[in-house]
Image 1 (cartoon, rainbow, N blue to C red):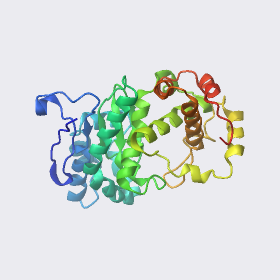
Image 2: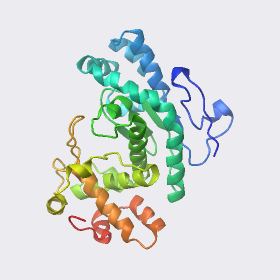
Image 3: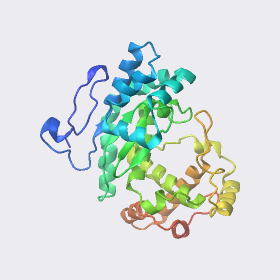
Length: 306
């Protein structure tokens, strides 16, 4: 597959599979548009104002002038110039640290294209909406779906202390995880009140698919954090599997402290399902098209400690 790249300033090649208006050709099948020009524009404004851009400048020159993906991120997660300015004032190191991730963006586009090519081979119906990488207000790391595309907050992604130490690996593995979510069934991922089992399988499936397609998971240190407690945690998880209170298992970490043990257990359940499957291709389809978490758990053969 041929990648089409365009050089944009100091960050080098910033797009793959450019739009037809740029190259008079549609993106190749299985290759998403990857947009990162918002990152360069943010740092142009940031540096021109010595690290203290005003809310008005951020709104007018960064957000309003941004890509469609940035506009979607702003709409979905209430990102405004004022909220970015407030976050810069509260934690300027977050935006300085993000430079190390911005610097490696050109090295990640080929790897991300390889991720989507592999996903397309494993699951031919896979959808490939655009990926937009931008700077936000400190959260979220990722958001999006098959219609809106995938939006990544680079400062949040780079600021989490327990993701991959290598910034390029971090970007690739986390984007692979988030892109797996794009493929999942609405019934699994769009429920506003999921059970512990449902949410953990949604996240665990994304972790497993990220590992298959990118070679790593978004939470590489979770396994070490639970070592020696696998059986205990597994039994507690089964007791809580029907609860809609996720606070013990998911979305309970901070940028400095890991949580989300449900990711790890969900991953182990999905891995067990895959290992027990006679047809690995059928297993991939079953993982992505999962609708019934209880039936999936039963079919996985997983037990606490496995």
